[in-house]
Length: 246
Image 1 (cartoon, rainbow, N blue to C red):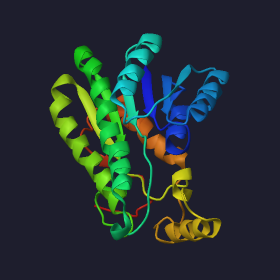
Image 2: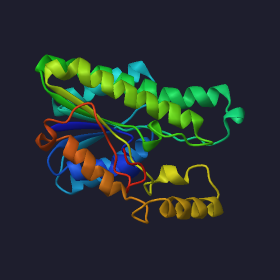
Image 3: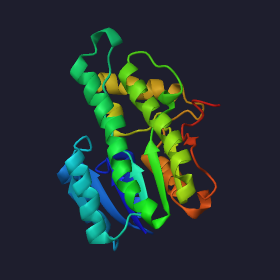
């Protein structure tokens, strides 16, 4: 098995790469090239097989080269974890146009480009599994996170469309909607006191009374990218501690 993971230098992507490396060769892709290399080195040092690429998922040429190069080196891609993302906070009235574009390009455009290039080979081989990282915020409204909610909703909507379009080719496409997970993105662009307050608030609003761990989300992705989930398609699976219940 060969799996491509974007946004894999830290957080959920890194945890998933380390977990899947027990049964799959892994391509680590991240804008943070040094971080990606560190994860690949850890996998290879532990007896797994991994390679790292520095890539901007919003760049069509870079994405096309990424997929071509990794399939040349490690073989056809059987699975994709589309996980690259960023987070920008602030009132809607203060969102600048370039900030909106960065959010939508990184999430929606990036997911589309990676999926499109990976799906070409999967269609030819009539097999494949894809998991996209959406969010609980794709289905609930959150103040001061308007652009993030919009981007994650776009990913969820695209996931459902892809699931229907590519099911005839025996390709499954699902999404995860993590709740509050203790990752670097939760601390991004915040002062230490803001981080502490945010962690406490997120733990308090979670029925399980704590933040989730990246490894717990990785377990969900591992399941979805396996035969154990062979009849699950087009779904948003939410490892969220009970924060959002349908």
